[in-house]
Length: 256
Image (cartoon, rainbow, N blue to C red; front, side, top):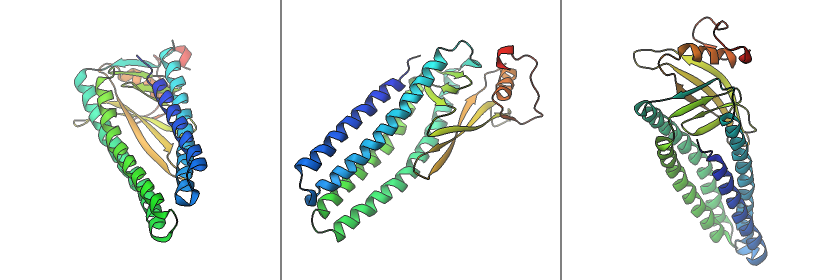
């Protein structure tokens, strides 16, 4: 399986360099009162965000390499195409809702700031406001496109799950259990019902702002005949099972 997280690291570094150059150019070659200071400030802010994103993807890439190269995986499951498709569509809807909520929050703040510049700032206020509105439009387009791209990636990715002690890889996407912006809360076992297939549910929280914490679940289907292995994984990761917990007899010694 290809570790595509490294491509995201390189793309983030490109964004950092690009907006850092815009920041320097705006500060040195554009009249500050004609919008130069605002452009420099926004570019500097995006540069800082790009650095954080690059560090996040760098950590994800290293965790993904560690999982793929590990010889002590908790489990490696391969799924039929139809199960993988249903899972990808479910995660697509969740991704779309998260992006919509984040755009309403961030886009709303940008629009209010732009209106303040346009209405109350005489020198360069119009140019700054229009720049912020244009940036808001770019964010809106990105928020709509990224879920589509992620769905396309998930449908084309290997329909596999790698489960380890430091994270999971599901349909080509890696989810570290511990990072500076994301942590796992619990692992639970979803029992089979007439409407639901058995699955492992990995519940995460991630920091998406200075004080904004977002929760999300990664639902990993349990293949037929792997229920005991799934129960052992929950125990190994100290998760919760919807039955009385006990140490499984079958689990290999190196997991204890």
